[in-house]
Length: 373
Image (cartoon, rainbow, N blue to C red; front, side, top):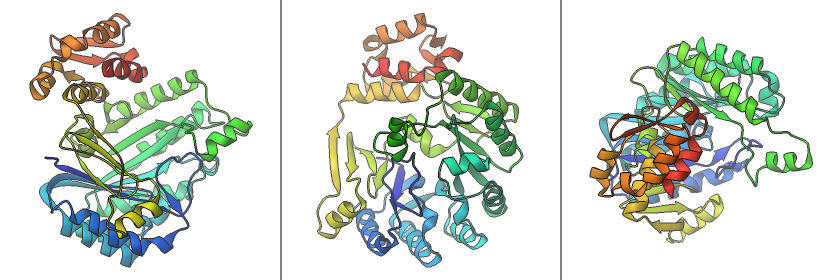
């Protein structure tokens, strides 16, 4: 059974133009209903024991103090957190106060993931973020004073951004008390306002060469600052890799609740309805919140574990995966592996082990697609 759980909190002050998550802005009138039904959905899990818990959004820290207190109490009631449980909460810099951070720490939250995105005022404005560079720096300091394990997200390759701009973001990050950094190239997702603006010519995507140059700059700067590059987009201080995300990449299964939440339990993948109001209505009517479900075959499971696992810089041991899944991956993926080895995208440091090459790190999606078949 899973030892990991995810809770989705859909509320935000504002929905950024690039965001394609299940989010509602300016709908705080729904929070009371949400708190009641999230407790109902969690109740169905029958208080499982877990080693990692990730509360994402949306913006979980958008709750006011009383609502946050109730939410945290619900979570503590509905899970058995192991003594070493990694409990992550996403937060935006503008919501951080010493009081809120102290409350989070008191209830057992021991890792905060801040949606910083940039320390450049013009880039933040373009990304429609609600904080200033000073807010971001102050938020990191405020959290670190009370909760030691601070992670930040940074976006690169934004319209109009130069390599120098991006390097400045990395320099500022290096001077802060953070333990983890996730870096992402800006993507234009269908259904977002950024997608529409690009179609109208109001925004332009960065070139592939620009993305690669900025990505390599991040690898050089962060590794030079003592971070370990352990997954395509993820860098961590020694021993502080995100255990929850490692659980995803290793295909270990997880519970998930809330609007749009996707779970993988007992060989089934299920996704809740993305609409917050529809999710609330279904739960209040004692209906299932699930909008999509799929039984995963053993071969599909094995292929997915290989495809997601190869994103980890250390690579994967195919013999171990075969032992755990019962699927002869080295046979059914032989052509995909040999092709990627021939193309210089994979390396074979041991007879049963494969890992991305330096070139392969830039084309990880290609390798993953081949492994999926």
